[in-house]
Length: 275
Image 1 (cartoon, rainbow, N blue to C red):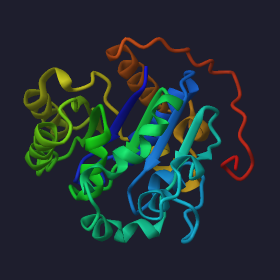
Image 2 (cartoon, helix red, strand yellow):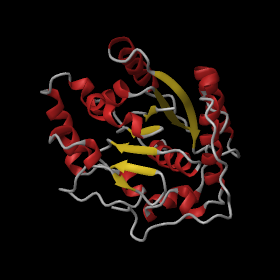
Image 3 (cartoon, rainbow, N blue to C red):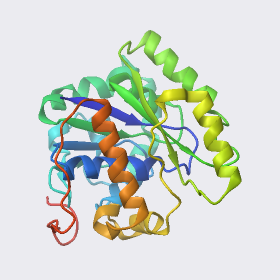
């Protein structure tokens, strides 16, 4: 199977990047060859995998604007089978440059089509907006995963996202589907969290994943150490949730996978990425 999945929500702080990084990591740990493409100018997925995002380093910006071949921007990460095309601050102004490009909504699609057969899954971390970068991601994707925080304003603005997905499906990518909705930062002790989760399930129905991601301090700490949760604290509740979520994604796609052996050590190259 070769599948491109975007992780999108224009609302910031909902666990979008955390979900993208950790799902991509667990996919790789379960035996799949995975590429993560970071198209968020903040570059949090890049730093979350222990890779520097210094200005001037080769990044997805160079692929989009400077005609660098996508394969020349790929870095290996500390997780075996997981590669990344990183982002850095150069990406901040790319939407202005995209405006003047021919077929501006399909630039990313045309660039990464050549990589599709090299990976079983390509995960795209979108910026928290509905601008041209997100449109490009949706145009080249087979499906989209929507992380939603279990908080009071969870559904605020979601109608805009759903409308954008509908428009992309109608005009640019008829094959685009909603892979699923992920409930994030859920506190089972809170009545509000349960009420919000019920609302989201009513709104999205069976597309909501059965596995919800709990509010977990280890998940919050891991990015500051440049580590996915499996390498930071694989026995915490957040790690267990992302492992189960990844298994649920595979099951929805009828994809076989290897179970992770908990006592097996994952080799980590000092300093992060294997360049």
